[in-house]
Length: 190
Image 1 (tube, rainbow, N blue to C red):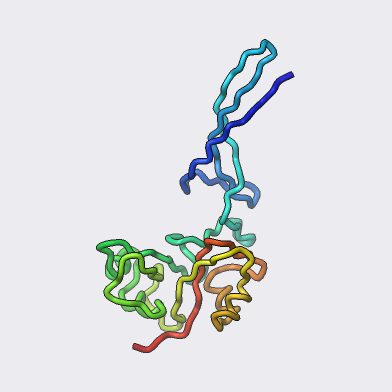
Image 2 (tube, rainbow, N blue to C red):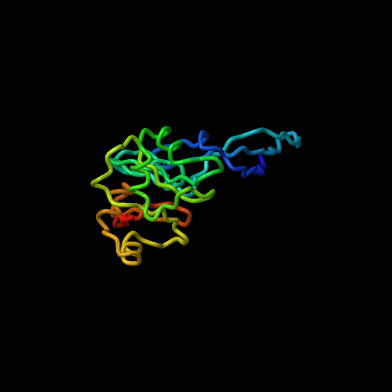
């Protein structure tokens, strides 16, 4: 008889270690496995276990993992980045990096403050110059599980259809604690 015990190292994996298999995002976790051989000696071997990753959803239409996190593109037809400002960053830096212009970044951010403050959240349009037909957006982090898009639409007086469209999520998408979403708002006149 062979007895096996597993000691797993749940270190924080990097984004590059994720793997999508049959619409489930899996993360490799390094493990040490001690095996008792029939000769009563213990042998330790290294193994990798694939575990489902939390906070990741799979878009059923494209079969691509869609993260609702900072620094990851949100949207399909129109793409946006939620970015937390760091020291020495500017709207011009973002415009150059994401092929847009300062005026477009300012226009789509609901109540943006300039000059930018460290840790402020900025929504950046990706590869877009003309944002005249788009609403302003506010970045919002889901604070608890069980919140639905309908709950957010009622709480913030949002168009549910716009919320689904700009966040590129479907009617059955479950929001989880820690997810970041875009709240489409009316533009504030300066």
